[in-house]
Every structure is written in structure tokens, then in C-alpha cells.
Amino acid sequence: MITETKPTTHQIAVTVNGAEHSLEVEPRLLLVHLLREKLGLTGTHVGCDTTSCGACTVLVDGVPIKSCTHFAVQVDGREVKTVEGLKQGADLHPIQVGFKEEHGLQCGFCTPGMMLVTSVLLEENPDPTEEEIRWAISGNICRCTGYQNIVKAVQWAAKNMGESA
Amino acid sequence: MYPARFEYFVPTTLDEALEILGRYDDGDAKVLAGGMSLIPVMKLRFATPRAIVDINRIGGLDTLAEEGGQLRIGALVRHKTCEQSELLKGKYGALGDAAPQISDPIVRNLGTVAGSLAHADPQGDWASVMLAVHAEVVVRGTAGERTIPIDELFEGPFTTSLAPNEVVTEVRVPDPGAHAGGTYLKLERKVGDFATAGVAVHVSMSNGTVERAGIALTGVGPTNIRAAAAEEALTGHALDDDAIDEVSRLAAEAAQPRADLRGTEEYKRNAIRVLTARGLRKVKEGRS
Image (tube, rainbow over all chains, first blue to last red; front, side, top):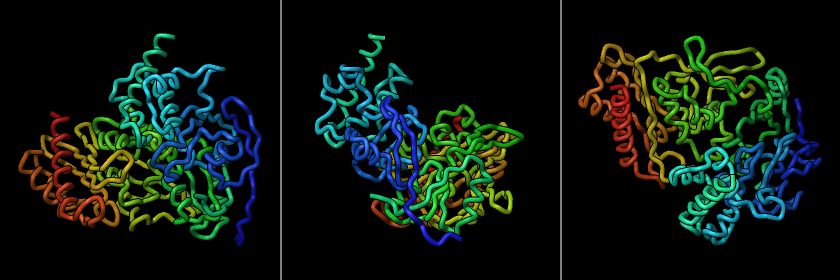
């Protein structure tokens, strides 16, 4: 029987916002800390740290997950997208423009998660109803806006992305 | 918050996973599927396993299909897959109705049905559903495969009859027949909160009467509870108002709620009564 647990590390290869990284990680390193502390991508926020608030949401192979509740070692060979990966070249993504135009944020802490979840919603459902929008963002907590302007921002993005498509 | 240190293994076959689990003393190695319960308890250091065996890259564990007279739900089937499945409607409606009520949409992308059962949180929703539909859990250990009837799985809060080095590979639900239906109703304060109370109901009908009934309760006892007296009272009866009133009363009697920040004992017991009645009426309407 094994009697001692040593802090071994693992070599992982992960693509983050299109850039490939080879990193050495301790198994207990959480994905959110890999992103923020090792890669300097501080757009992903640590909110509740208890899988409740969604501020740390990132996409892994296109699927929204809470990066405070995922080990970095689990994303070996996967593609991660953070809020920094939303912009298209020098231009803001229409979802980002929508949050700006409709004042979809106040303190901005929940915004990265809200926008990433929105990006997946609009891919799957380009013309969501208000109810579908509220359902989609129900894993993300906002303590400022009362959600009204976030819904409007998503609607703005849906409308403008639909027109440009 | 950081979990305590652990060794990480990512096997690609079940045999390899079992071999790794076998190297550790009882309870020292934990199986990681969705991680939606395990990782939070590790961060809080309620759990400090010395090894994590990540089963996410083992092939063949993500089956969700009806085969040979039963529904098969593989260990890696996520809540989200259940939420979107056309299969989990009608006679398997208790499952389909429960899926979108689990936690929140982001958690549902990763969390698994089998993991929820193995975690055995008495406030977990799937356990009630699986009690109601009389499911069984298939597990593999180094000694081979065995099948655990759902009534023999839950032993207490966060405690199951699984051996420490066993892995749940599949949940199986017997085909309840064409004239069957069910639902799951949950009272929660907000999205993502645990149930204040929840009720799974499931009935198989024959000639206008209930041939087999399943009623199970969430969040009102040390484990999810089968309301056996309520099930018995419903069996052989039509789903009429009198039967629904009596069965709901018996379901509430089976509850063992404790007062907490979500409500008093009396409130939760009444919630069970109301949810049971609503659930049975919904099943009746869905069938008429």
C-alpha cells in the first residue's frame, strides 16, 4: 500500500484562446488559478469559490463550466476559451458591444461569465425568447443589475449578430 | 480554496481504473466524474483523498439508451444530456422532468446522474427519481460486477453500500410499460439551491388503475425516502381525487424533515403533501 502522497506534477498541453501552452501543474491546481496566475488571464473571476456564482465560467471544448470547480490537469488536450478570447481581432464581439450599449453591467464582476454563457446560447439558439435568455444565464449570479439590462444586452447581441450573419 | 494534495490518475479503461483504486486503502482514492460535488467537498477539505481517479476519458460510459427492456444510463451521462433527451419523456417522464431542475445550467454540463447517486446527498434529486422508478445500480470492483437495487444503495447521509474501491458503471431503469408516467417536483428558493423538499412520482397503469407506484422524497430525511405506505395505498386504485388526497397525506407522514434555514418541519411536511398531490395530478393529466 502507498503510505505517502507526494506533490507530483503533470505536464499538460492546452489551447487557450487559440494559443497552445505546455504547462507543468500540480493536480490540485484549479483551472481558474491556472488561467489567472500562470497565464495572466485575469478576466476570469473568482467569485464565490463554491460552484454557485458562475463568475469563473469558461468554455472547455465549447461547453460552459465553472473553472473554480475543475482541476487544471483535467483540460489536458482540450480547448479553453476565456472572456479574453471573445474579441475578434481589434474589434469587440457583438456580445461585448451589446453589454456596453445596453449597460448590461455595473461592477462588471459577473460579466465575463455572463458573456461566455451568452455566446453558447446564441450559437445554439440565435433568436432566444426572454425566458430562454433568463434560463440560460440562471447559473450566473449578478448582484448589481437585477438582470434586466443583461437580458437587454443579450437581446441586442442576438439582433445584431442575426443582422450581420 | 485549495484541496489537500493528491495523486491524479486518468485511466482510459475501466480495468485500469479498478487497478489504480485497488492500490489504495479504503476510502483513500476517489472517482472523479463530473466533480460537481466531489471537488467542492475537497476544496472545503471535508474530503481529502490521496488519489483521484478521473474516469472522464474512459470510453463507453456515456450510453443513454433503451435496450432489452430497460433504460441504461452510463456513468458519464451528464444532467444536460438527460435534460435534452427525447427518451426521457412519457413513461420515463420522472427522469426528464428532474434533469432541468438539478442545480444550474453550468453545473448540469458536467455533473452526472451516477455521480449524484454515489455521492448520496439526501438533498440530491436523482436518488428520489431512481427510487420512484425502481432503478438498480451496476457497479464494478476488482472482484467483478454486481447490481445493487436502489433500495439497498443509500445507507445514510453521504453514505452508500458501495465498497470504497467500486465504480458505478451504469444506472438501469426497468421499462415501466406503455401505460406509465411520472414527474419530479421540487421546491427550491432559487436556481442552484438544494431542495427545500422534492417529490418524485411514477406510476404504471393497467385497466385504469395503478399497477405499480413509486413515490420518493427529497430533502426530508437522512437519505432520500421511499414513501412505501403511500405507494401501497395507491396500488390498485384509480388516480382519482380521493386517492390522491390520501396518498399525499401518507407521503407527508413518511417525511422526516428537520427545521433549518429553508423552513420548519411543519412547512416541509406540508410541502411534501402538496408536491405529491401536484405530481400525481400532473401524471393523471398527462395520461388523459
